[in-house]
Image 1 (cartoon, helix red, strand yellow):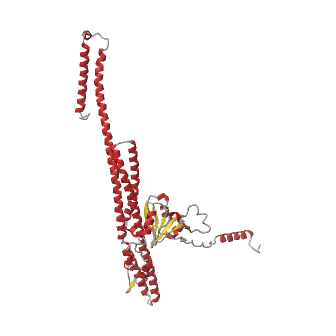
Image 2 (cartoon, one colour):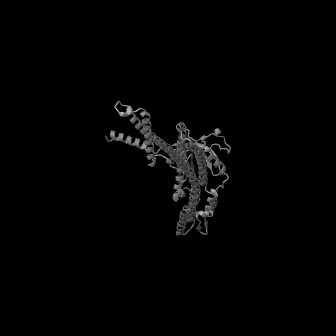
Image 3 (cartoon, helix red, strand yellow):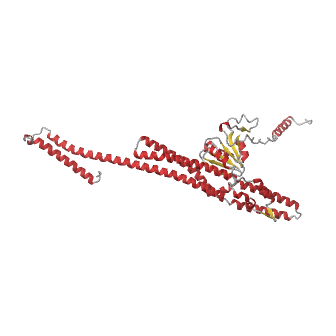
Length: 449
C-alpha cells in the first residue's frame, strides 16, 4: 500500500491528464488567403466572355461550391476594374462590415433603399445598385445584370477622368509639414488638396444616384407616354377592356411611386442627420487616422530625444488636443455631401411630382367616368319614372273598360253609338291624367327639362 498511489487515485490522475491535454489551445489557423486578383477587364469588354477567378482554400472549395460565393466587381480610384468571386466571410474581412449589412444587399431587400455608414465602408443599396464603397475601392454585387451595366459603364467612363486624390502624398505632407514652428496644423490645412474634388466615395455615390434617378425618370416618362392615351380613350368609351388597362396602369404607377419614395426618404433621412452625413466621409476619416498615427509617432520620438521630463508630456497633450479639435471641427463640415444629396433630392422630388400628376389625372378621369355613369343612371331613372306614369294612366283607362265590361244592367247600354264617345272621353281623360302627373314630376324637379 505504501509503494504507490491507490488504484482510484491513479485513475483520477489519468483523467486529469486527459482533460489537461484536451484543453490545450489548438494551433493557430493560418490567416485567410487574400483575394486573388483576376484579369483586368478591358474597357470594351464582352459580357459573355468574362471569366472569374475564385479564391478559395484547397479544403473548402467543395463545401462552398453550392452558391455561397457571389460575383463582385472591384473598381479602384484610377478606374481599374476586375471581377472577383468570393464569399461573405472574405467580403467581411476585406471591408470590415458586420454580416447583417450583407443581408441588406441580399435578394430579400432587392427593392429597398439604404445608405449605411460604417467605420471603414459605406453600404449602398439603391434599387438595383448594391455596392460596398471604401476610401480606396468599390465592390459591386452582380455587376453583369442588365440593370447594373449602365452603372458599371459610368464608373468606367467617369472615374479615370476625375481628379485622382493622391493619398500617399497627403500622408507624407502630414508627416513632414504638419508641424511648423512648434504648432500642429489642423486637418483641413494639411489636406488642402482634397477640397478641389469630391472624395472617391462621394464620386461613386454621385454616379449611383445619377444612374438610379435617370432610370426612375425614364420609367416615369414611359408611364406618362402610356397613361394619357389610355385615360383619354377611357373617357370617350367606358368599356371592360379600357377599365382593365387603366387598372394595370394604376398598379404600375403605385409600385413606381413606392420605389421613388423609398430613395427620396433615404436621402431625406441623411439630410436630417448631420452625424450620419459626417460618418460617410470615409476619405477624411482615413486621412485623420493617418495623421493621428503620424502625430503619435512624432510625439513618441520627441519624448525619447528631449532631455527634460515634462516637455514631452506637454507636447503630446498639445498635439492630441490639436488633433481632437481639428477632427471635431472637420466632422461638422458636411457641406459637400449636403449639396450633393440636396441636388438629387430635388430631382427625385420632381420625379415624384410627375408621378403624382399622373395619379391626379387618373383620379380626374375616374371622377369624370363616374359622373358619366351617374348621368346615365339618372337618365334611366327618369325613363323609368315616365314609363311608370304612363302605366298608371293606361291602368286607369283599363279599369274603366273593365268596369263596363261586366254584365251589370245599365241604361247606357241602350243608347245607340255611345261606345265611341265613351272610349274617346276615357282615353282623353287618361292622357290628361298622364300629362298632369308628368307636369307635377317636372315641377318637383324629378325629371329634367
